[in-house]
Image 1: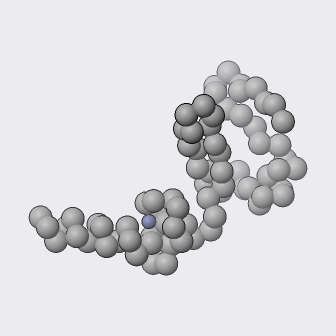
Image 2: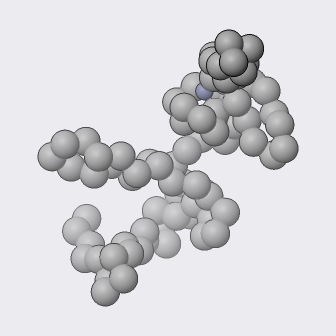
Length: 81
Ligand SMILES: [Zn+2]
């Protein structure tokens, strides 16, 4: 599938793909990564850690999920000060 950006730099994800992957406009978060010779756009799975975006978020705080490793790193920075 080849798509062109519009004049504002946006690309439209076709409706069939949005439906298949349950991508909801203005709600679903997408991760955009520079992979060197290409750009990867992926849907962030539900309950993914809001900091590292890779591990499962086990701790919920103010409508966001965080993994224990990121929480430990944050806490250690606060305690070290
Ligand atoms: Zn994390």
